[in-house]
Structure formats: structure tokens, C-alpha cells
Length: 117
Image (cartoon, rainbow, N blue to C red; front, top):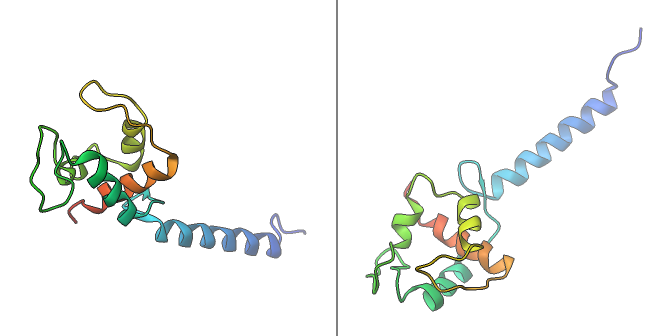
């Protein structure tokens, strides 16, 4: 009687699953959130473009009426996906910034790095 799955096929499957798990484990900032950006670059971009209205750093004071990045990071609805969608959509009370995908990834990574553990 032949086995339904070959040993070599099973080994390849488990190795692929292990590699995927290791990749996802190193790329997450919060449970289940894949973050590929550079937090340092995201912080710099945010300071340059967002600090007129938002408190960008954890100890910064806000200059405008936008929420602080720490409060944004800690909203239950804030995820990598929601931030990406937000930053790619124009909003009435915000300047219409045109960001590259890399810049969006960096800003998202920075904001999510501010989340309380």
C-alpha cells in the first residue's frame, strides 16, 4: 500500500511552514501585524511633515489639533492595514501628501513602534 503523502513531500511542506513562520516572526511589530518599514526614517518623515499638527514623538507637545502619534498607535482600530489605507487616502483636515510606498511603510512602522505593550 502506498502512503498518501511522500516523506519528501511532507518534509518540504514542514520546512516551508517553518521558514514562513520564522519570516513572519521577525517582521511583526504587534501581534499579527507585518511591518516592513524603517522606524527611524518614519520618525524623521513624520517630524518633517506631520509635526505642525501632531505630537510625533512620545514626549512631544502638539502644535495643532491633530491627535498625537502615541494616541493613534494605541487606538484599538489602529493596524498596519488601517494606517496604510489612511495614508493613501486624502482627508479634509490634512494636507494631501503624496507618499511613496516605502515612505508609507516607514511612517506606519514608526507609528506602530509607539504602541504601548
